[in-house]
Image 1 (cartoon, rainbow, N blue to C red):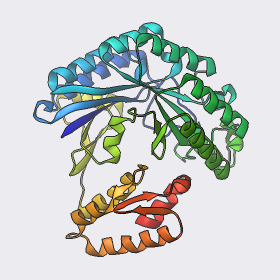
Image 2: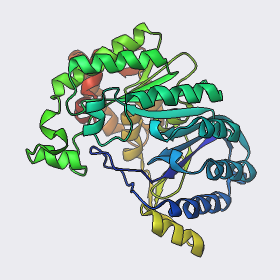
Image 3: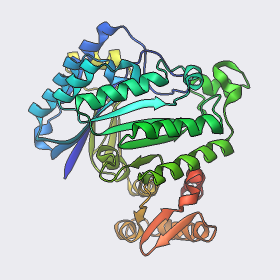
Length: 383
């Protein structure tokens, strides 16, 4: 067994209009105390007694805002506190935060994968979304990363941003393919009531371009177009929102979908050991205070009983294009949940007859042409 470590850095330069994450814009003088707290949590996490740490992912927020020396200190603390055999070490970075010097420092520190939050190559869409970068910043950042030695770059796009049209979406996908990142994520915009854009859209307002959000059919069309273009360019579609060139699937994120163990470090980070899930306090200042006091930062702990674990097997597993091994799941849960499995078999048969789900031997997967309605499929299957 191996362990993935996720490290949360909940700081941003500005808050995107569509964001509902627990992040904030804070003074830069709070960065170093937070990084110190991260290192102290790592040192106190008893990682020496757990399996090999093979993947590390620094997400946020915008962890690329931290000084490279702080990021290097975090990785060094992980190395000294665990059986570290890093195969994949990812740093999330916004294009405008990247310089040639920072890219070189990241590579030297041991990062070997960068997740680049492009979101769009259209300046009007970026401005409406509250992003600080523009199209040229993405190209410049990619050049800096390649020049520093990075050969594993992931690039994100969002389908459904305000002012997005079929023409601008096709242009963004085409410009992404000019950079030819090793990995691509395409997310469909979620109109969330906890985001500024979501509140405005749900209220029928016009701020943040809320009246210019493409409808669901247009978003699905954008997603299908990207899927076709990426397939033609040699990318493998391995998870609903993720494509990778051969050998470049995200090894860390696969742990989430396969329900493998991972440890979350930092404010708001979540962990899973195969039996239970837990989370740290979300507010960064409180997290730092608790660490400095030597107090626990955990605020949630949930042991997964068989009904919830079975639900996760389907919800997380079916996000993968390869699907799930239904025979293995039935073996694992038949003794505990025979009635629930019987109900699931009936629903699977119904969804299969309607063309939403495919069954190949013991493999169960969502039909490739129905991925855009996966949430509706999960509701019908698991409600």
